[in-house]
Length: 317
Length: 229
Image (cartoon, rainbow over all chains, first blue to last red; front, side, top):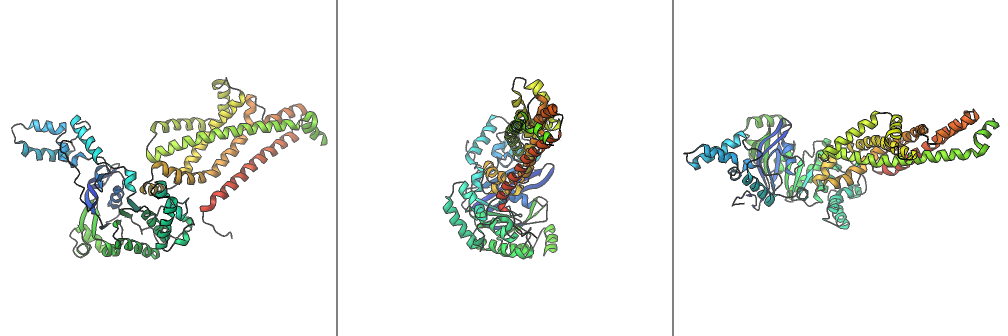
C-alpha cells in the first residue's frame, strides 16, 4: 500500500510482539499500554500483585481476551485488528490529520507533523470515518498481515490455573482430540504421541481413565502434555500451580523446568519466585496495568529499582 | 364388585376403549415430545451461543418472547386458543400435538440451556486455545456434558407432559382420561375406570423413569466411582 510497511516483526528470533496494549472490562481499565516482545527460546516470567493485569496480558497473547487497543503479532502475523494509533503512516492518511495540517498553514510541514501526530494520539482524535484512502490503507494492510486465529492457536499451547481438562473424555482422548479433529495427525499417530507424552510424565497407566479420578498435580501435568501434543512453538502458563496442594506443586514445576531445558519458549504467570529465579531468562513485574520493571532474574531480585517492586518483593520473599 | 368390573371392562368390549385411549395419549405425548425436544434444542442453542459467543442477537430476543408467552400462560388456555382461534383448520389431534409440543419446547429449552451452561467456561477456553473452532468445541465438549446434566430434568418434563395431556378431552379428543369419563357417564360407577387409568398412567411414567435410569447408567462412566457405604 504505497510503500507503507507496518510489519517489522519478521525478524527470525521474534515470536510474540505486544504493542501498545490496552484492555478495558467495561469501565475498568486492566491494561494501560503494555508493550513487550517474546523471543524464540526465551523463558519470560511475569509476576505482580493480583489485579495487576498479568493474566489478562497472557490471555491476550492467544486472544482468549481481545485487547481494546493495541496489536498482537505472532511469528510476523497480526492477530488483532490494526491499531492506527501505532502507525503514523496511517494517521497521515486520515482526514483529521490533513485538516489539522491545513489549519497550520505557513509552518514547516515536517516540524508540525510530529506535533499533530502526538496530538491525535494523545487526544484520541481519529473518528470512525476518516476517508477512503485511510480506510483502504487499513484494509489492505490487514489483509496482507492478518492470521487466522484458530490456526495460530495451534502453535500456542496454553496451561490454565484450573487445568480445564475435558471431563467427558478419557486422558488419552484429551490428548488426541485436537490433533485428530484439526487433521494434523491420524488417530494412530496421535495416540502414539499420546503414549509417548504420558510415559514422559509417568502416567501411561492413566491413559483410559477420566479426569475426575486424578489428583490436581496429575491433572495439571496432563494439561501440559495435552498442549504439547499440538507441538506448539510457545507455551503460555497462567498460574499453573496456584490451584494445587502444596505437595503437588513440585511435580508440575519439575515438568516445566524440563520443558525449559529442552528449549521451549515459555511465558509464565506465577507466584513461584523460586521458579522465576531458577528458570526465567527475563522477569517482568506488572502493577496497575503496566510493566513496571523488566530485567534478568539476577538483577531483578538483587537490584529492584521500582518502589512498588521493592515492596512486593519484601512481602513475597 | 364383579358387576362393576364387568360394566367397566368387559361389557361391549370396553377394555378395548382403554387401549384406544392409551394409544391416543401416547400418540399425543410422543408427538409433543418430538416437537418439544426439537424446538427446545434449537431455542437453547440460540440462547446459549448468543450468551457465550455473541451471535444470533435477534434470534435470542425472539426466543425470549416465545419463552415468556408459553411459560407464562396455562397450557389449558393455550390449548383452547389454538383449537378455537389459531389452528381451526387442523384435525384436533394435530392441534393437541402441536400445542403441547410448543408448550413443552419452552420448558425443554430452559432445561437444555441450563445443562449447557453447567459446562464450565474453562473447558471451552481450553478447547479454543488448542485451536478448535466454536462448532468443534460445542460438539465435542459442551453438548455431551450438557446433555448429561439435562437428562434427569428432561425426563421430569416428559413425565409432566404425559400427565398434562389428560386435558385434551376439552377439545374433543378421546384420550385415556376421556375414555374413563365416558364409561363412568354410562355406568355411574367411577371406582374401576378411574383407578384403572391411574394405574395405566403410572405404568407409563414408571417405564419412562426406568428408561432414564438406563441412560444415566450408560453416561455415568466418567464419574468418580465410590464404594457405597
